[in-house]
Amino acid sequence: MSQAKFATTTTQVSDDLRAKTATLAEALPFMRMHAGQTFVVKYGGHAMGEEHLAMSFARDIVLLKQVGMNPVVVHGGGPQIGKMLERLKIKSEFIDGLRVTDQATVEIVEMVLSGSINKQIVSYITAAGGKAVGLSGKDSALILARQLRRTKRDPESNIEKVLDLGFVGEPERVNASVLESLAKSDIIPVIAPIGVGANGETFNINADTVAGAVAGALKAKRLLLLTDVVGVLDKSKAFIPELTVQRTRELIADGTIAGGMIPKVETCIEAVEQGVDGAVIMDGRVPNAVLLELFTPPGFGTRISQSAK
Image 1 (spheres, helix red, strand yellow):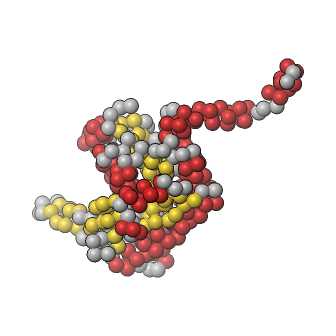
Image 2: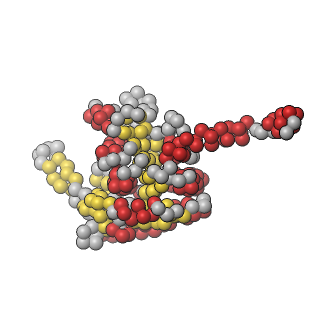
Image 3: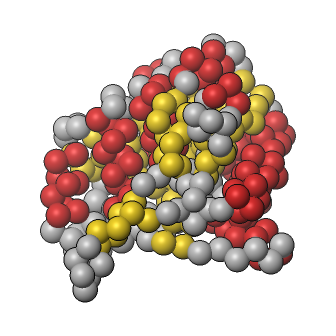
């Protein structure tokens, strides 16, 4: 190629295309580093309710699979469950942020989570060029569960009583072999957070908790919790990019981490202590959030690990 022709060709490449190719080149070392590793992604919040974000999420998950990684999706669906219960005029009560789940409610919960939501996510992944299969914890006894026990102390009498949450459960054991078999194929598992009890009962389980248990059972490289917040904040409301397990516990103890963030970071701690390399709380409302965390040097959310990297 002549010098003049080369100069003409290079000037025709836009800055946008240059930026895209540079990004791909920068992502390559991360793709090589993560190849063959398992990544459990909890998908929920507003990202599930907006179609353009849902489609973006599906493309990200398909990309992970196509570059040799093993993504496992666990999804929530609290708002959708609430809308269905309202439509059917079934009243719902919450205790300490947990939906009290009687027999009528658990049937609706299973219908919404294992049915419409699960299949919609599978459809988005299929439309993005991937192959996905929808599962619940009842399939092949994937998630054996027991009733969640919570206690509450009466401030006046100081007597502690056991709360009856009905069919609200917690994972007792995850059958990792089912997911390990899928990892060897080109199929992406999409899991609804429904568990099965020892006597065949159906249990409604918090999606973050299921994702953490699945990540721990698979010894995943990373647990990614997609939420509606940027991550963990310090007392001045500044974003914290990285925490150790010990430091996270200190922030809970001094009140820096409070409210609804406590169960999320506790899920991360439990997953890390079960062998997960790192757990990340991140903003799922941002397009390509998963790719930003896995394929860029700074990452994207608050990463909790056993020790500083």
